[in-house]
Image 1: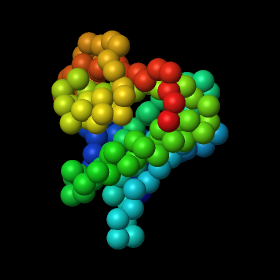
Image 2 (image 1 turned 30 degrees about the vertical axis):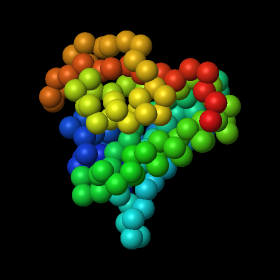
Image 3 (image 1 turned 120 degrees about the vertical axis):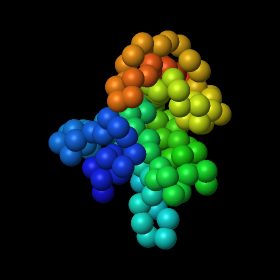
Length: 135
């Protein structure tokens, strides 16, 4: 399911091998959103206290604007707190206003920029963090 979702949702989709390696790590937290018995979104994170990183989040286009990304983010924040992470990081395409708005709503702020980080299409990566994390 994840490899197919990656191919649908991202121009820089992770390979099945990369996904399998990520999921095999004891520090990975994976969340899947289900609607009517079908997976409609997912979030992958690396949580190694005291830090955590949101690695991937994707929601199928047919299920966007229904709060699924927010609920996945809430699950990530809850699990991060449970695992003792007090600083969280992520990177996002600087031109992805919808995602940036979601992350700001959950207390993330910008701290840097990686120029021309993404390819196909080329875009900068906005670096965001949430310090002093308390759920």
